[in-house]
Structures are given as C-alpha cells and as structure tokens.
Length: 193
Image (cartoon, rainbow, N blue to C red; front, side):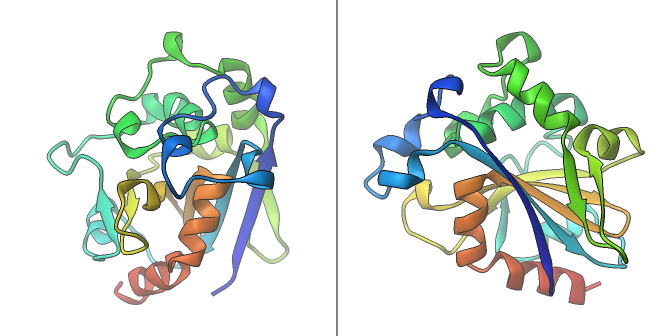
C-alpha cells in the first residue's frame, strides 16, 4: 500500500503551547525532534469507509466512544491546533473553541495548504477544500499497541473522503504511527470492506 505524506514544520518559537504533556514524558522527543510540525498521510482505497469500520479494527481506539458525534467538523480548527502542539491524549478530550486556539494564524495557514493525494497523476487539494467538498466523516482516536504508556499512543484524526482516508497528526505522531503499524492497520481496514 502506497502512502503519500505531506508534512509542514514550524519554528518552535512560532508555535504557542508546543511542549505540553508529551514533553514531560520519559519517551518524549530529544534533540532534532523538537521541531513542531503537522503531517497528513493519504491512504487510497476504492471502498467507502465510515466510523464504524474504523472502530471495528482493534488497532484503532476512539477517544470518546460514548459520543458518536465526537468530533464534528466545527472542531477541526481546535484539533489542528492540538496536533500542531503535539498534545497528549487528555488534551484532546477538551477541544479548544476557535476563540481559545493557541495558534489561530498557523491553523488558518494549514487549512489553506495543499495536501497531496494519490490519483493518476497525483494531485493536491487544501484541507479546507476537503472539508467543504461534502459530508466528510471524522474519527479521532489512538493507534494502540505501540507502547504501554499513554503518551506512546499516537493521536490520529482520520478524515474519510471519496477515494481514501487522510490521517492527520503531529509530524512526530504520524511517524510513530507508521512505525507502529498504521499502514498495516489501514490495509486490514480496507481489506475488511
């Protein structure tokens, strides 16, 4: 399965709130990994995937399974802000409203940037374009099985769109998710359809 990633990095002094709970963890980043960033990974499939399909794969654990409408498209800006700051799981349980974002200008920038999506030939579309294009089911949770400690589980925002899934996380989170089997979990998800 081919995965196309789009990553954007920022200067640490430009990202407010970077260095939350994950920085205090024993396995937190060191050295060059201190660069805040966000990543989008495109996984192609011809199957229509919904939230229930994702939750049927044991590798994925929703953050708030008791709330079927969590998150909704109005919370995307807050989720992007948390991903940019590489927030820990407890921070994602209270998604900041638009008027409480730490980095509103960077979030606006992210919404307008192109995400490369695989088609023949590859093309790109802005995240805002993806969200405005129709009813995009949204799922947020963790990829489990990587480590015993909660900070080792990458937080993933999955946007299901026609033709595939866009996974969004901090750049570090996408990297850790890929190391811990995100690609295999997506293959199981797509093969189960």
